[in-house]
Image (cartoon, rainbow, N blue to C red; front, side):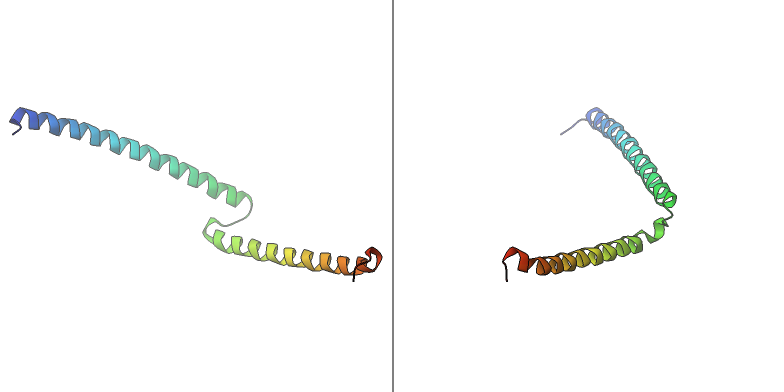
Length: 89
């Protein structure tokens, strides 16, 4: 069984480790907050409300899908028009 002095030393070591862990976690939190602030400022600079970023992403995805579909249609139409000249049916 550990002596009282040993238990005291173990408790001090653990406390020191926990203090260091708290400081490390606080540093990570501050870095994350700074990154978030920079991302929000970048959004605002592009006239996008950070609170509505999901809506903007959805709009962009919808527009991208629309443009890809249009491109596919135009390519299919061009292929069909060129088929007689390429000996294809």
